[in-house]
Image (cartoon, rainbow, N blue to C red; front, side):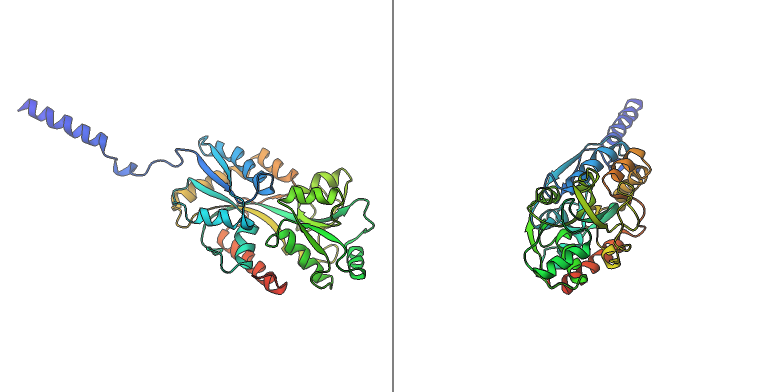
Length: 329
């Protein structure tokens, strides 16, 4: 009888080891590498910010490796579509950008996803635009540029990275605010922000509006002349450059780039909470703040209490701009 009792106890112990306990039915997250999908090319601003996040936030995620994977194509829509369809387990996320999450859905109503078809974990950074020319350009102000375009429409060129991008929409909107008709200045397409900036530097184009990260260094080196930024105030890295409000272009202030960490729809709240806790710690990390600021960007983790509302407002802005500028497909 005693031997039988011991046998039953041993079997119970084995069974208890084989079955998960009620408190531990879900494996801890994360317990394996996490993929961060990059919707633009390997030299893009997006890839830069994704790499910065991957190398800085893992210390607040138990040292788990974050792997950046580029899925460029269709102005970010290729990557966004893939992420929308991945399992909601927290191991495939995306560095969403204004282009992929707001502009493309606004310009292309027939995309396989809408702006709200994702889990928004948090806004990472705000990326003001800088509108600039070469330092040896005859145009000293944006009004000089507009006057030259008005005199000889269709002769000047600007850098863009595609129709459905903030680089293109910002110039189109600036032309409209300046009283110029569509087509007054010709857009020349490039694979990414760095290539678009390089085209301005070597004289292939006369003008650019793009994220600060691509222009901060050449402006500091005196190679470019900035007309204004779309930052809410002065950029710490370029304090002498006026913002759009200061040069009389208040409406341009609404156009800023941004990065947001997103996941597929239905991401469990426990995973979202784990990420937000890690991001909250990252927000006060001095190295992180320094790296973001020196790129001409604004650290934004935790500044948007309602991430869904922020993305919705951005989508509505670009939906209005797409219709206003006649860009909707």
